[in-house]
Image (cartoon, rainbow, N blue to C red; front, side, top):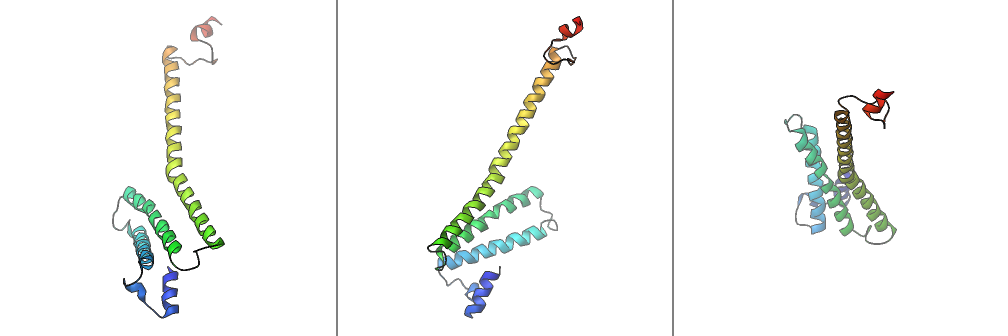
Length: 150
């Protein structure tokens, strides 16, 4: 949040409040506004009585701030236009995207697979109990009749 204020103060220009600027600057302004609204929403969602699932969706949607900030940085100013700083910027963005995708796509799918596997294991165990006449074998791998013959 300090970045646009420090730029405005250093240049003695408050174009932050104007839309008569290049699209790259306006993209940064839109990103800053979205960030501000997201933080405000996060602070007030309980007082507003917002459902947790709606808040969570909005919270995950704040990833748009990361994407917009990345694009803003890529297309404005000479700092990230070439060289090692550009590679670093793209690398950081790639890591953030990978973590976001892992956390929001892979982890939930993994939990679904674990839950399905647990449900299948429970169904197999229940079928084994029903098949044995309602008795669990004390010796796995032996039928109920073999157990009674001992």
